[in-house]
Image (tube, rainbow, N blue to C red; front, side, top):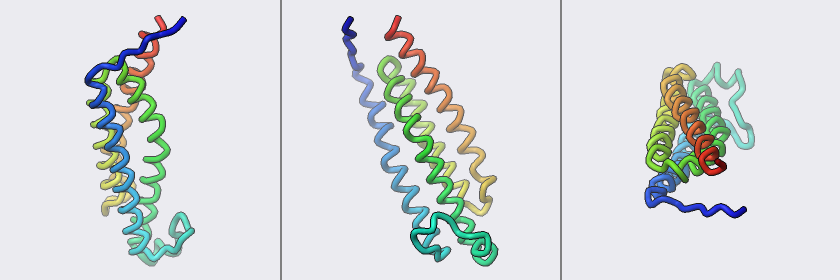
Length: 148
């Protein structure tokens, strides 16, 4: 049996939030490149060695930036999926949670690459994890609403 899917007018907010992640990825790339250059870690090495970190504080920041970027890309696909699904029935809630997630991922990056190092990522992680789990709940509820 066919299902007619009507996209609400507010779905444009969901798409706008999804678009923020494209720019956030660029911020990650620029920050990682900056610290790679300062750490003098040549391509294709993905991380600075322990010896390089011991000699150069920028090498540690590069490793943190690289890990923050990897963590962002690991979480991006499930985030976008849940954002787009939840937004079909709950566009304002999805866009609000998605915007908070995107902003918290910026806080995560900046905190992780600050002088605090790995401890600096805690606030951004906490907020993004909370937004993520609620958004996934909305996505599951949307599927339930569409099925039943």
